[in-house]
Amino acid sequence: MSAIHPTAVVDRGAELDSTVSVGPYSVIGPNVKVGAGTTIGPHSVIEGHTTIGQDNRIFQFTSLGAIPQDKKYAGEPCELIIGDRNVIREFCTFNIGSPGDTGITRVGNDNWLMAYVHLAHDCVVGNHTIFANNSQLAGHVHVDDWAILGGFTVVHQFVRIGAHSMTAMCTLLFADLPPFVMCQGQPASARSMNYEGLRRRGFSAERVQAVKAMHKALYRDELTLVAAQDRIANLSQSTPEAEPDIRMMLSFLEQVAPQRGIVR
Image (cartoon, rainbow, N blue to C red; front, side, top):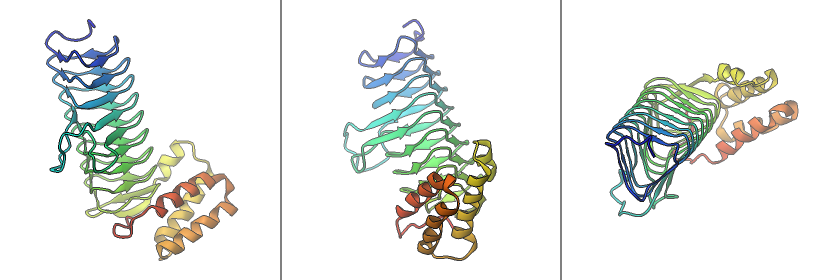
């Protein structure tokens, strides 16, 4: 345990792997578990029922596992669970879940979370996402794999953000953002699909073409959402290689709440 700075306060009940390092003046609570290879910077506070995986890099002045900003919370043993190989930059605040949902705020693997990112209670973040500085998520927001949030993006509670999507700086999201869509504005409007990001991730020309066809159905041909779903479902016949992408889009659209809708 020599990697724990002598000024750090680590509760006897905390479970830290012997390879974990803790910087000066950090405070680790009794119900915290931290996996191998994780580094915790100076002046960090990690509390609550918080589980952190392996090889995370947590920078100084972070607050992880504090109680939710929810007046209904009454001390229930809710959780914050963080996976492996995440980078969590300065002044990030991740709260535990609430009894009004699953009780768990969850962050996956290989995410890049820049300074001042806020994850409210019961948020679920997938893998390989990027949150630029000051991205703010209200409660119960779900963000799927490979999504990118531009700086100062603000997301309303219960909104879902699809895989491979992207928001511009200062975007305000009141509606669900489907997979692959790039949006911008206050409130957000769809601008295009994230074609360059898909190419960088190894999408074939056929898969990118299918994404273009989905964009046309959703945004270019003035179809209702139901009619757009029907057209997207038929794309798998002409582009079988893109069937997983088509299924992902259809699954996302089927879960859209009527009162919220999608970014248009």
